[in-house]
Image 1 (cartoon, rainbow, N blue to C red):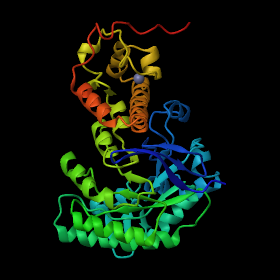
Image 2 (image 1 turned 90 degrees about the vertical axis):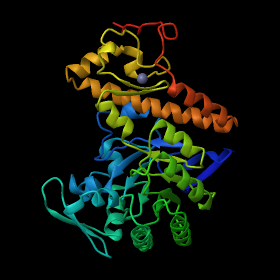
Image 3 (image 1 turned 180 degrees about the horizontal axis):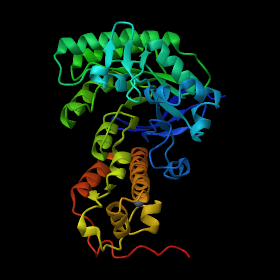
Image 4 (image 1 turned 45 degrees about the horizontal axis):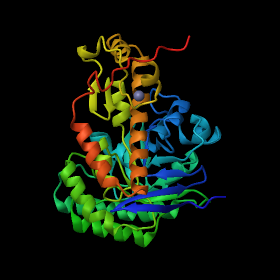
Length: 386
Ligand SMILES: [Zn+2]
């Protein structure tokens, strides 16, 4: 059996290239985890997700406990079998989703009582029940149940919330069933307050986890403040454990965060954008609903080997979105996940070769550049094999 741990292969500045070893196989880091909230990466088959090079996906406690129910998933052999993903799965604890319910939830020192967004039925999550549910789902990585206030908030509110989350982290750890190759991550809170983040890191490392996440960022504070918080928080985190920045972000957010020592990311951006006709490319984003793509025989990107780029034109994608055809979101989600995975591979390779700064300068210049000209990308898409 594989012991759950993270090994570092190379560093470049604060950036790290490593490997996460788990019961469900290894994952090269830095890594981007496609979001599979309800047991599916929306509009993707798991074979398609695999084909992009994704090594680990997310599931969500809140959604899966309500439907189809954690016990049902357990009876059907766990989430890996249920959704046909043999690689590692990280499950969010449900804390963030429950807090987002606003008036539909009631917080106390012991946990949260809330009404289901599906049928209004009343449910309760505590650090213990969230951990038990993630165990029933057979999550490779279990997250601590925490509370995160919306930013901006006064420091005293953030402090109170962070200290509650730290008490819940200790209870989550108590409830965690240790198994070979499985891990549990603590979540650093404290908003953008340096001293509170430091207090949170200390509380979590005193408890001891297999990995550490940074929560409560990318909630409206802006990139500059997020990076400033990483600058002061990440150096305090253990060197020998994986670091996961939750809910981030754009390609530029990922690059900047890797350069500050983050190893793992998740975000709905590439999948959500794929359903709304927005394509991520080396030259920034494209809106495929835009009329300028109506007659464009070129692929979305000349550097992409996804199904959308290897077999279809921008014009076809444009047509699918204009006609509200379901294949549009399917192809474009595939493309966006493929782009994110390609970006992470590029970044990892640059860390291994000690040229991340050079790559960063190049990537930023490309993102800011105009779309490829006809001269730069003259070839139309190769027609499908009959
Ligand atoms: Zn593509």
